[in-house]
Image (tube, one colour):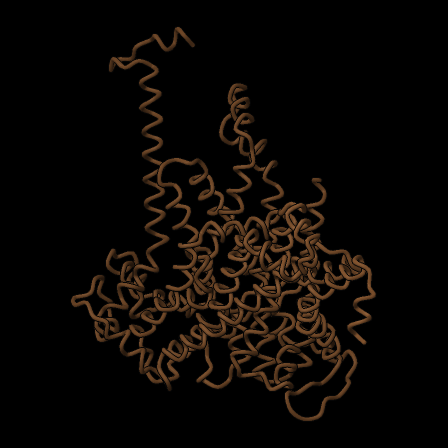
Length: 299
Length: 298
């Protein structure tokens, strides 16, 4: 090794310098590949955005233009009166469903996770396995009876009914995650409070909640993004157009239910529906990844 | 009276009761929205069950009909073919991406985030985005291909069974590869660097390291990513419903799509339930395989 590094090559560079240059060139190549791939990955979103700010007539041009000749928010304006009631109602529907799902998932997962982590009661293991085994049952396979049941109790075509179903989809993951969060908290912390005579509920509320907050944030992110994006159940459970969530409403534009397919408005709608999940993901990425690793890898 | 009964309980017993109360809402939800529907699916599958009107017990007739339902068999075949075709690109690209973003070089977090971004977009919405990009008249793909003279005339990507399959796969790879990348990245990062260093001292090249160190040590992560990806593909619906509406000539109707059509368009819910049970059987078998593969190692 020592002799080889002494050898000089025709350019007058030492072996060591060559190796360093080679490493730098490889790093540069790696970045080049990364940048190209990143642009390819971003392209569909950027392209959708670019078209959403074209004039409606330009967004329908055949063949399409690459860049807008004029920047306009007309496509977004058209959405506000699109279809029967305009996009605002559908954003509202999606938001309400997502918020109920988030609230319900947090409350149930926290209570259940605490119960499974800290208490001993008969049948605990059986119940825990029962909750977790539902992870294996894809909701697509039980949609038919769910629909029949929801119709029977007159909750079909309601935002609340859809949210109930979404909460259930979130529960196995939420319980698993919150139970692990509570298990990670040392016993001593709550024991003294319990000996002081605090009730279990107030120990949970006053003491434990702060300590398991990262888990709660993770449950909330997943509940929001999953319910905001969900398509099949929303398509089945909602029949009145007034109650359509955003993705179902956008599909009606794509199929030209309201006349010719308005591609410019559709892309504006795509952007509107992408922004919330993207924003939440970007702001709380660490919690999202924790959930992915905790939920997927460690079980 | 309830008050005194509660007071008479020992601390132990009260803890038991409290714990039970904490998990009751969850257990109730899971029972009402998972366990009962599951039992009902089985029950319904033995019935002729229209949305309105008389239900009738018909034994195994729904299951017998499955064997004669040409579209059902076609959908099974299509779904498996789709799964077999979409999985390799997801894994190859996912592995390449994971290798590229593996080391913590500068700005690498930004690249990881960008590759993962499509995962948080809904599949329904991403399908709406892609169906527009793939359009023969106003789609950007045809525009680029025509501008660079790569095709003589605009292509109807979604109008022919073969190309429809390919472009849908392209869109799904874009949408989901980030998820596989993250799982494989976790697997890569769990391998200690010393193993590679000593292999290099022994003169091992890239492929020897790949096949003797990287892939064997990542097995658990690969198995997990594989099962999640395969299950996702078998359950796919949104991309076909939105991009091709099952066409051309009913060539892109997945299992879930055919269940959806029977149950919620023709309202043959008993028949849909029978198909759901078969679907569930397929998935339980796959999950069982997952558990088996994951356990073997420990």
